[in-house]
Image (cartoon, rainbow, N blue to C red; front, side, top):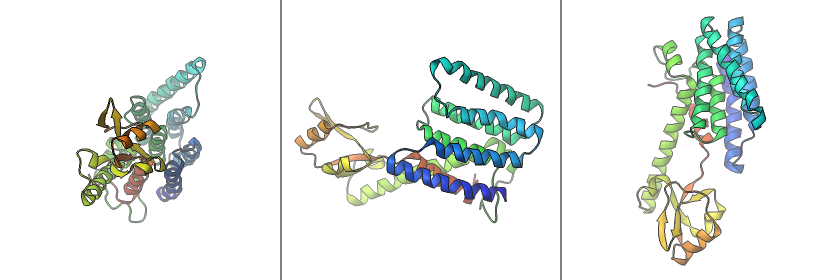
Amino acid sequence: MLDLIRFIIAIPFFLYASYSDWKDRLISPLVWFILGFFAFAIDFYQFLSLTGIIALIPSIIIFYEWFFEWENREKILQYSLWVISFAIFFYSIFTQAPPALLVMFLMLVIFRTLHKIKIIRGRADVRALMTVAILQPLYPEFFNFPIFKPELLEIVELTFPFAFLTLLYAAIASLLFILVLFLRNLIRGDIGFPEMFIGYRIPLDEVNKRHVWLMERVENGEHVLYIHPKEHTHEDLISLKKIGRDRVWVQPKIPFIIFITIGLLAAYLLGNFI
């Protein structure tokens, strides 16, 4: 029943994180700190052996080290922790530690790297995915879930871990959201490519009342459309009003953690359909 316990513990944390990010555009790091504690506690119980405990140490270091704000003079300590974690990781390989724990560590390193090279920008999003990696090192099974179960489960768990499955479903959810935007704009007659796939039109006066990115600007006297918009100013709104733009294209600020939460639910309930 460990997987059911993981599911029951994780979902409230992710729902709260989604609500918090939607409402305040902020997720307290304490959410992932506490959930990570529960996740590691269950991992300790599941892989209770000397080799298992040692193999968990590198993941604990990489996960919790990121909660500290290292000053420049403290960087040597941060780098030392990384060296220690990799040293223990390679030691665990030679001691034949549980493969799932080795993959867990690699997943954490991969997610940290994706954030470093700005493929996944949100720090909270990366922490959420890292939490999934330590929460569910193996594919879950409880009651009749998940619906889809891969035949070569042991191989799939190593080559396509549960955290990757969650990220895949999150990507699918975001693509479905794009489709919904397209159909919404098509029905309303708001046609434009590619803006109808990534945004929608609202009255200019409502831009500052909603969590949206303004996609339109007036630059050097010309009307410009931004596919990757940034924060706008009051002057941007005035300039658009002067050229007669009563309704403008905006891009909704949908926190990616919402898609990750949907992905986590889908991964738990649907499973791996590949």
